[in-house]
Length: 258
Image: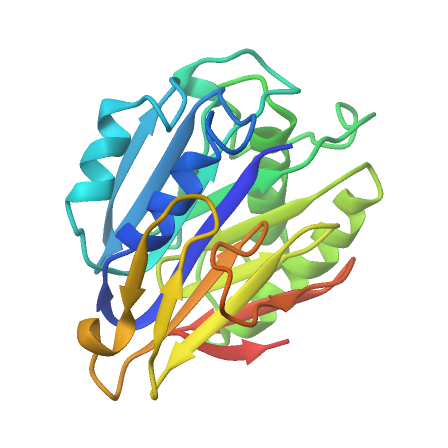
């Protein structure tokens, strides 16, 4: 299985600490050696870095670990391939435009008997993964439901997407991260957790490598940062573990639905 990482924050924040732990799972402390990717949102724009090499060996990953790109929403993924070959076009996260916004998606799991279900017209997969086909199907269904203009209440859109995720989960394992650049949705099939950090901040140590950070020295008292991961990244913090079919929606680090 692959592993997911995402962040929602109320101020531009770097994810160097969490990504450093995740990258180790791409070939050192985990078997996820079939590529990795990360998307940072900056206003309505985003920047995405991908590599088909393992994150523990990637020079691009070394850049991300050393260069503190600050963002309010981040989506990242390290891959252990099961559907589709090891290639850049099959590397998550995937991005599509809808309603004048970039939507970014990443999936952990494996689906079966999905070819006849994931029929889409407006959004088409570039690679050959079940993950990307599911993303395109979700986006098609959203347009069918809400039309070509974003509704005033985006929460109803994510509630609808949660029903689509329930349908996909019936086909196998479907842990998902999805964002429109403002909201961040996490949907759990079997492995997903999150932690929200706010004042008073303390120290934390990564599970996968000997790195410690004192968040009190890196933040202000008003900062709120939520990190979502497949498995906890730190050993001395209390992570919230999601159950099968459970989903959460965050905006600026705060929990909106869940």
